Amino acid sequence: MKPKILKHPSYTYRKDGVYYFVRNIPKDLAKHYSKSKFVKSLRTKSKRRAVTASQVLSAKLDDQWFKLRLVDDSDPLMAIKVSEGAIACRFGFTLSDALAQYLETKGLDKGVLSHRTAVRNCDYLKLAIGEKGIEQNTTKDAANFREFLARKGLSGASIHRIFGNIKAIFNFCILENGLDVANPFSGTYLPSSRPLETRRAFNQSDLLKLNQLCVNKNDDIRWLISLIADTGMRLSAAVGLEVVDLRLDEEIPFVDLKPNRHRGLKTLQSVRCIPLVGASLWAANNLRSKHVSGVCFPRYFSSGKLSSNSASASASLNKWIKSIFDENYVVHGLRHTFRDRLRNVGAPADLIDQIGGWSSSSVGQSYGDGYSFEVASILNSSGYRFLLIFTSLIVILYD
Image 1 (cartoon, rainbow, N blue to C red):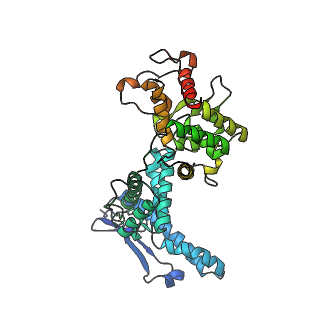
Image 2: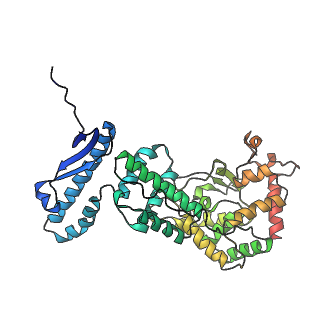
Image 3: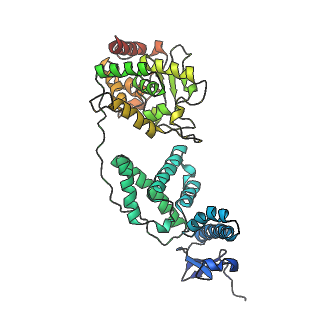
């Protein structure tokens, strides 16, 4: 009986049960290498993982060799253009490779917002330390990345979230490809919290002043502020609005707030219809007059990209607001103010939660479909119509 021949994945062999990858260096490229073979432990005993890792490594080598051959060609300009890519390939798996593999495999069950967050976080890392191979990143790089994020003014909570995402991407690449390297982003000291700007509610006189200045300036930045002031929307939700979301031809004009191709929404409760009154109605009419279709605030969209840039909007809006007031006001304070204004006119708590998109801690609040949008049928516990709540609110603020 002939002995059974164990077939291994292409370009691999086993030693002590562990798979190794091996490929001969092409003779025409031998001058670029100190050895005649490329050998690397795949750090796995699993044939399935060895197949995946060997295919990826083989593709990387083929790409590297193609670029090296271009470098060896006679056109010096071509050599300059590809030499950086060829050097990067020598690092093995780059951050871009790891991100692509993570999104293609583990990201299949995640939403668009999760994809965009991972891409953004990796872009931050590239800006901080450059594009490196996964195996070339060090704990010092991780510390530098932490300081880079801190200099951007991100809160401790945001830095924790970004590091968590980067660690997950690195861990996935290391485990999937059997890399013999520790995750440099594990164990990095992270601040428990950074001082956050106090999100103070605006007092009545300052809110009136802000609204009047917005009317005087009368541009898209001020429209955004006014829209938030009288709807209580989060900045990220408002920045990503499309013109079609402004339902101005209805009996009661409203914003149809829902996820779109530009951005998701923070919570399930964030999906809602919000009546447009006062400053928000003024802003919405201006936006509809300026834009027939598309996004409402194109200045906050990256060129050629669909994702809205709420961070840029926050910086510019807060800078303008801080130039006016001595108080520590920020744009998110308008959302806090909105809740206070609804409380002050006696709106019931569950109605406030529904209008503002806040989650309720009460189990009973999750029963039923909530308040109907139609004004005639929306009553609070005291018998006041929903529109009267808003009318009272506007009278209080604008009389």
